[in-house]
Image: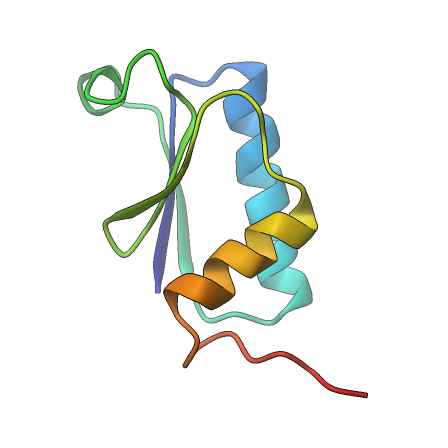
Length: 88
């Protein structure tokens, strides 16, 4: 799984990147997590940054950041075979 947070490095971008990393670590996901700060790439999504991409699919755009719980839901919806829900 390739997870990308795209944005120029503003506080919102950094916060989303950190949340995604924390979720991935907590769920023990085998994922490549990148913070893409390249302005040429970010410009494609302007003014709706940061952008959360999973395997090339846009799962979130904009400064109204998803919670960690919502990020986990988005990852589950995008790759149900990779992110398993743990039942107690």
